[in-house]
Amino acid sequence: MAEALLLTGCSQLVTLAGPAPRRGRALSEIEVIPDGALLVRDGRVAAAGPRARVEKLAAARRARKLNLGGRVVTPGLVDAHTHLIFAASRAAEYEQRIAGASYEQIAKAGGGILSSVRALRAASDDDLLRVARSNLARMAAHGTTTIEAKTGYGLDFENELRTLRLLKTLAGRQPVEIVPTLLAAHVVPPEFRGRADGADDYVDRIVRLLLPAVALERLAEFCDVFVERGAFSVPQARRIFAAARAVDLLPRLHAEQLRRTGGAQLAIEVEAASVDHLDFASAADIRALARSGVACILLPGCSFHLGLTRYAPARKFIDAGAIVALATDFNPGSSPTLSLPMAMSLACTQMHMTPAEALAACTINAAYSLCRHARIGSLEPGKDADLTVFDVSDYREIPYYFGVNRCVQTIKRGRVVQQATA
Image 1 (cartoon, one colour):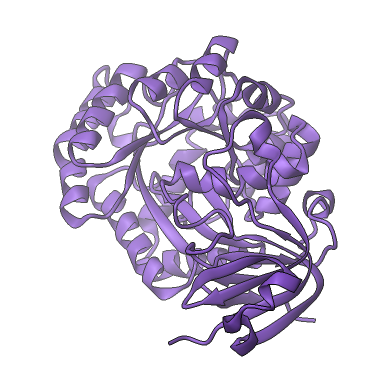
Image 2: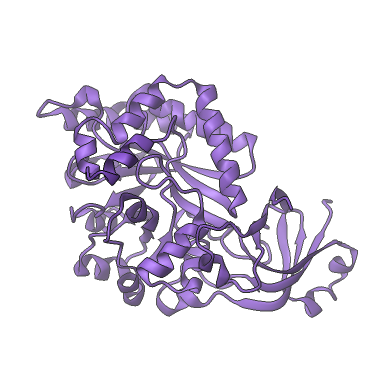
C-alpha cells in the first residue's frame, strides 16, 4: 500500500466537485472550501472537505501530513490545446509582425507554419525531445498536469508518425499526462502547393495512408483539422473525419479563427470532441454549439501574441449555455506561452470571464474535452490526485497576478512533480 498523504492548511480548497461539463451559471459553481483538507491514497483522492471533518478519518490520522501554510489548492490544470513538438522559436516573425506584417502575409512568404515544418524535418529526435521535455517541465511548474499535444509540423507520412512516436516516448519519461492528436491537416505541405489538386491529393494521402498507420500503432486518440482559407475546406475536413472515425479517432477542429468558414457547424455535424479558436463564430454558431455536446476551447493567448483586438466572445458562449474551456494554444508562432494562469488572466480581462469561470474552463471542462472528466479535472473521491498549490490566499488571485507564476507545487497522481524553490 502506498503511503497516505493528508494536505491541510489550505486557505481555500477549490474542488470543482459536481457534474461535467459545466454550462452557463454552473461554470461558476466551483465549490470553494475554506480551511479545507485533502486526503490522498494510492494516487487518488480519498477525501476532500473541511479540515475538521477530514482529519477525523481513520486513514487521515495515519497519513503523512503536509501543512500548506494558508495556500490555495485547485485541481491540476488541464491544457486542452497545445502544439508541443517543434524545433525552434519564430522570434523573427514576431519582430516582422511588430513592424506591420500580418500573420497571413508572413505565411504566404513561406514563413509561419511552413517555417516550423522545415525546422522539425531537419531536427534530430534527441533535439526535439530535449526542447519538449524542457517545455513540459515549465508547464508543470505553472500548474499543468495534463496536456493535449498535436502533430502538424511534420506534414508528411514519416514526420507525422515520428512526432506521434516522440509524444509516446515523452509520455513514458516524465510525469505530465499527454493526450496525442494527429493534426496532419494543419496546412497544405510545400510538396503539394502550386497545383490545383494539391490539397485534395494530400487529403487523399492522409485518408489512405496516414490514418491507418496511426491506428495500427495506436499513436493518437484524436484527429484535428485546421478549417481555414489557406488551409483546408469544410468538405476536405469532412472526408478526413469520416476516415478518422472509421479507425476510432475522435474529431477536433481549429475553426473560425481568422474568419468564419463553417467549421463550427461541421464540428456539430461530426460530433467533435472540441472546436477551438472561434473568434469569428456567428450568433447562429453560438446557439447551435450551446445545444450540442461539443466543447468550445477558447485561446486568448493567440489573439494577445498576434496583437489582435478581437477575442472569442466568451460571454456570449457562456450565456448561451455552451461548454467553454480555455487552453494556451502553446506553439512557436502564434501563442508561445506555457502558462494556463496567463490564459486565465487574458480570459478575465479581455473576454470578461470571471475567475471562477476561467478556473472551471481550465480544469473540469478542459478534462471533458479530452474525454477524461471521469478521472481528472476535479478533486473528488476516486479521481486521480492531480492538484496544484498556489501561493495565494484566494483563488481569484491566480488570474489577478498576470505574468507572475504563483504555483509552488504541482502533484500528479499523488506525487509531487514540481516544487518551487525558495
